Structure formats: structure tokens, C-alpha cells
Image (cartoon, rainbow, N blue to C red; front, side, top):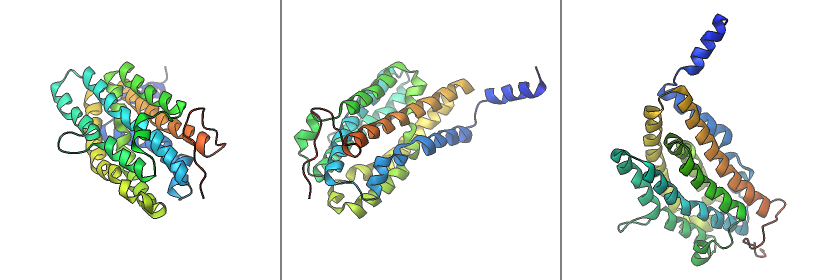
Length: 255
């Protein structure tokens, strides 16, 4: 075997440093995170109608509602009490507790600001079939993949803060009637970076080999694909060609 090949193989087997691992995950976000999706671009340009925003809020609620279920699955697989003590915060962040509302109720408030009825959102009877399938696929990911990959899949939080800040700015600019429903995003500006800092440190500390690091990066890529596919379904149903599935939410006539 040539010396250069040996050196190349050795380099590919070398564990990434913490900064290299974080940079690799950020590259996944730059390439695949749904801030680049045409649906979000239309949103940020102020080109979505109230009905299209209602469709987004209604379908996205289904995803929001499974996040604490996803985190409960991860908790059920965790054998380290120290990990569980930190991770259970995520469930409270979304479900709330006796002292504060969580992200799910804050998202309902956003949906109500679009003009949707609360019970209509919670029942989820008009969710797109693709939205339900894709959301359930995220639950399958955390049930079936390695524990390290489950934790890594949450690391869209590494780059979600920038999108959240941009989204809040653009929603206020283009859709001022949504102002009363932006509490969800305000909370995530602090929650997401805190969660990401713990998760990426955990992945770095517990990935014993370069191969395990690469599997963690792939899990993050798969999570990005899930988020992208959710918006694909919304775009197909409510933008172009505009074909919502039977039984799915229909946009009412708009002036």
C-alpha cells in the first residue's frame, strides 16, 4: 500500500476535535437546514397568505406535539441519571408545568393568532398525511437508532437560533397581526442554545471513534431531511401545485 494511502486512511480514522465536530455539524445545517426551503423563503419575503400560514401552523403543531414524546423515548433509553436530570428539562420546556406554560401551548397561541380555533389545531384531524408520516418517522428514529444518534439528531438546535431570530423579524415585518403569537420563538432563543451546548458536548464525549462521530453527523443530516420533507408537503399542498390531500386543511377564500 502506498505511503500516501496509509496516511489518508489514518487521517480519515482520526477522531475529530470538538471544534471540528461542531464545524462538521454546522456544515450540515448550512447545506440542509430548512431555512433554505422555498416555503420558508416565501414566508420571510412576506409572500404567504393568511391561509398558507394557517396551514403551516396547523401542520407544524403536529410536529411540536411529538417533541416531548420524542424526548421521553430518549429518556426511557438513558441509563445515566445525570443525563436524565438534564434531558428531562426538554419535556418541561414543551409540556410546561404548574409554574409556566410550555412550547406546545405557546404554539397553539401562534396558531390562534393566524385565526385558527384552538380545538381544531389540537385535534389535528386536518393534518396532511405526509406531515403525520414524517413526524412519526422522527419517533422511529429515536426508537431504533443508537443512543448517541438519538442525542445527535436534536442538534438542529445548533443553528436554529439564527432562523428563529430571522423568522421573528420577518413575521413582525410582514404579518404584524401575528405579533401576539410569537412567544414560542422568544422562549426558543434561550432554550435551544442551552440544549445544543449539552447535546454536542455529550456527543463529543461519548463518540469513542471517528466512525461513531460520523454516525452522529448522519443522524443530524437525517433530522434535517425530516424537517425539509415537512415543508415539501406543505409547499405541494398549499403553494404549488396546491393539492391538499383528502380530509386535509383547506384554505378558505381570501380577499
